[in-house]
Amino acid sequence: MNILVINCGSSSLKFQIVQTDLELIEKNADKQLAKGLIERIGSQALVSYKAEGQSAFKTTAPIRDHKAAISHIIQWITSDESQIPGIKSLEDIHAVGHRTVHGGETFSQSVRIDNDVIKCLEDNIDLAPLHNPANIKGIRAAREVFGPSIPQVGIFDTSFHQTMPEENYLYAIPYQYYRRYKIRKYGFHGTSHRYVSYRYSVLENIPKDKTNIITLHLGNGASACAIKGGKSIDTSMGFTPLEGLIMGTRCGDIDPSIVEFISHKEASSMDEVFNMLNKRSGIMGISGLTNDMRDLLEEEAEHQDRRAILAVKMFSARIKKYIGAYLSAMNGADAICFTGGIGENAVEIRQRVCEGLDWFGIEIDNKKNAATVGGKEGIISKKDGKVKVYVIPTNEELIMARDTCRVVMNAPLS
Image 1 (cartoon, rainbow, N blue to C red):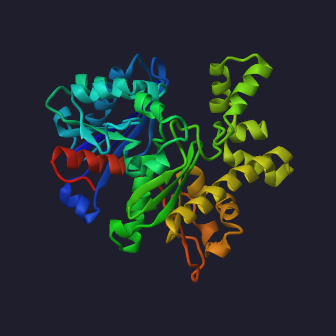
Image 2 (cartoon, rainbow, N blue to C red):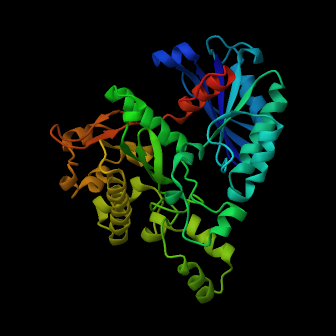
Image 3 (cartoon, helix red, strand yellow):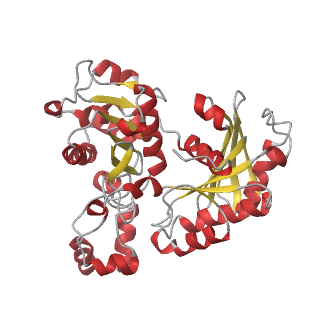
């Protein structure tokens, strides 16, 4: 099967084409055929495409909406220019998988999209006002372009965390607010944490139910996840992605009274305060320089900028705090797994996070750590370490393609 995987933002559309089927999944032999990104939808869009084994192609085009974006993608992938093997027409795309941020409590696994599913996504817009509307736009656009004959599947960021026990997902506020409004921890980055868990079990040659690890998805958005027996039992992001680790522009955990305090002192509305907590906080707010960890580490190394150093220290310390909490909750773990742009490439951050955790049996091999960047996968801990430390580049699109295949084929989801 050739599966088109789509990730829609409010003005962007990222895609991959993955060749997979149940036999290829079993052999771990799926193939990425092409990928691309369209940005600035609604104006003169920036377009970049790349077929496997071919040079990247970049251009601009007037793309008014998500339907036009999908049509533009189809035009390229079915053209002689793309040279994607086995794809010459629309009929050569056999299914479409959509990344969908928030499934609420309705969806604990990926599902085939129909009108009822879209209605549920619309009902959950209050829980993800920035993300679900964009996801719905992409789904509606793809259904228009492909028609009813091509199955479409929703893959939810929140579904992996639906295995959390209620003592971990409930907040200590009056229970009626959970019953009325479903205020609880949902967690995000679920597809990434799920992929890393799967990949770890492959590398260690162990069954899913023997997978006891802590995964760290570190990028501009960042989250930690405690995975016991292959299932998420706790995660750092909460009701929204604002909770948990310090991120690029998000504050992570804070005393909620700060919101009211700043609102009164600055004569700001709640919307203005939450805009600040989401878009002007995190390492950006602390450093006053950037939300890019690469730039901060450069400032620290070259100029010894005090606030850049502070931001890096705070970012690392919060991660370490969550590792300690999850090791306690899980009665120990077999491995710590780094992923995401920072997790996969920031040697210094991995080192700082693991410093001082030797009491738990977590010790980094500096040479291995320095060598494992740029998409490389492997163990970076010392040979005799009790807890292994892995770098595992994430591949959310592979999980999405596999789920799409399984749903279409009515096969069990792993």
